[in-house]
Image (cartoon, rainbow, N blue to C red; front, side):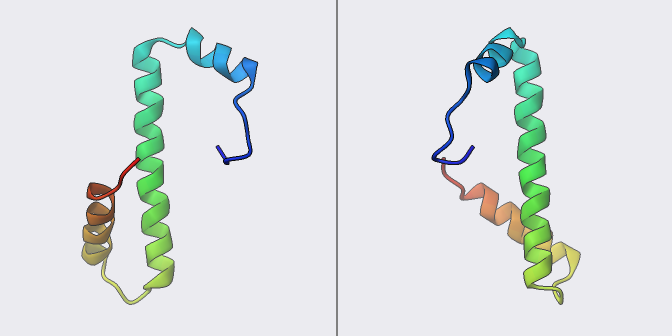
Length: 67
């Protein structure tokens, strides 16, 4: 969500209606999607990097990430 967006009542109700397990699965999917997007961005910036280096860099970035 962008900083100027607010959660709608419909979104809040939908999240509250989900089980904890469902919310956890969605969070996991979001995490792995973010890693794939970061890898794609790095691949675009560094087309000469081998896959192992890309994987290592994504792992490093996410291991040092803060919320």
